[in-house]
Image (cartoon, helix red, strand yellow):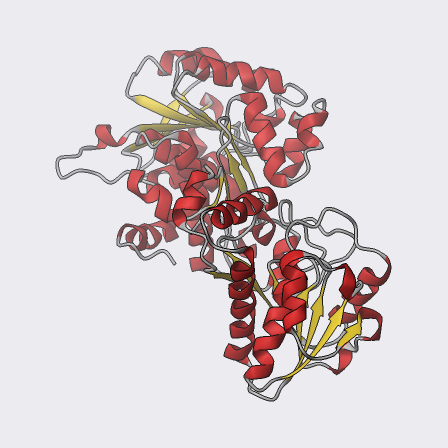
Length: 499
């Protein structure tokens, strides 16, 4: 149930289900029943319910819910945005089955309702809300009523999560078959409340036949490839991750990344330190080893050890040619790479340079972990990337442009692979908005790469683990807490406790 359907994919799923013998009217009846059930589950019989219906199939779902709620003893009022005579197909049939009055939307009184069902527009909305629709949505938001949205809150783009002029702020949303990207991407996610997925008879086989490329990031689909040491494992089998340290004034970020890699399961972790910062790093580290490495030439010599199989470059490494040379050296030695922070900024305006890095890596893999500012700097000259219609599509375009796995960070982190696969993370916590948290994330990803987890899955797992650790620590979290929270998170993960 972790696939996320675009509006086009949802239409295709509907069409295939109808072609297989389930009439569209039956699908609408089931959708409306799911909405009625959501209202009945939370509110007592006799409560006043205002159902706002739109001009399409979303409105048809609303008419079905209205009819069913009346039979259950609720006081239901229906208002329609548009003309009843203009309804078509299944929506017209659903409206014909409703025997009560239908008010014009302009006459609706949202401020007098206890419950409002928003059945105005669904996930496929492709225009800005204005005029009467905008006025009605703003009245709903100011009403104080409990709002149940059908499919997605009206005004929210189901594919991008963008607000189309204005958007209903729902307390809960009932969607069908699968969630949509707009349920997880900001700002849409903030408008959805609790999202319920209703089974209306669209089978898993139909969904599988669509070859969906986007999922919610969840252990259920990457746990089978999560590295678990065998009984006869030893540290060298679990991989050796290296984190490149910055100069004496910027060593803490590398140590945070190294601790993340170690807690993520890498058998050995080394901080490669400039000689001038060696004493500072050595004084702070115990299980993590320290090695003097002086620039790109020193790194090349260090990488003669073939057991080193994953590197993190970027956290407080310094922006400029020296860091670029480090990246190029590691890529030339075909070591899996996580590039973060200063390494990304060292390629500002040079996405093609990053593509060359990924191309040199073969199957070893590169993960780039930019926040929005770093993303904008890297792709500032590529309008097709920065102007893609959603965060999801920007990450996908960046992955295609660079040949690397992209982790576009934020409250709705998106992970995208060059082959088009993508995942949207949903277990984030605002407590992660603290200095150094991103360094730990880079380290976790490298720790998983060191254990030979495939790059896209390693990135997805790292993002999820990082967020789960942040949620476990909660208020007062500082970056140093995150690696120490990982053992409990990993224990639950491997026991199958991840909800």
